[in-house]
Length: 107
Length: 123
Image 1 (cartoon, rainbow over the protein chains, first blue to last red):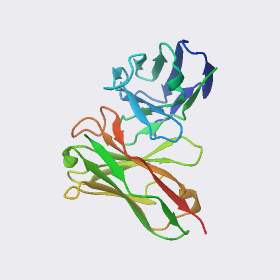
Image 2: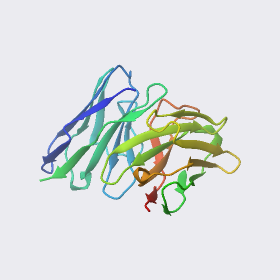
Image 3: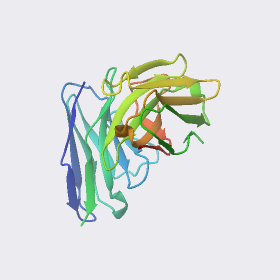
Image 4: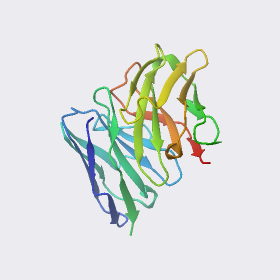
């Protein structure tokens, strides 16, 4: 299976900060990389698909970049409602996998 | 509105069988793959497998292959996740989610998601 490694596992930032989360794949996945936000007690919500495409309805402060094995999710200006855990997911090949998650807290 | 509605919470004993469901509405169910995801208490998301409802072709994670079965009935616009013999370690929330790209199990992401089904396995 393709392993996905997210970093950091958690972070604490202030409202208005720029936040970056990294996801690395154990082998190339081209751009088959998606990002999800999961707020406490809720189902996950798609933010970015195919590495760089903002899902309809997702706030424009979220952006994704990368290809191959290295990907990033950026929140340009952190908002209080961004308190959540963020997951990357690769969908290349027969078996998809999620990263272990990054918990974002607000200072 | 495109929506997935899952069946309600279940409490089972180890060794029992179970099938939970995921019903789609607001779109042509046969044209979009469905993925199942597990979330154990306080833990992250785990990809279990996916099904193409048009022909019931499935892919499974090796971690779940042989322990669960994913099926679909396009005439009922429903997908199912079933266990033949539950274990205490199956206690988790299970989510179904629809792939966003028609007829693709690869491109696009998963949206929408069902509300989740809590399965508790305890003696």
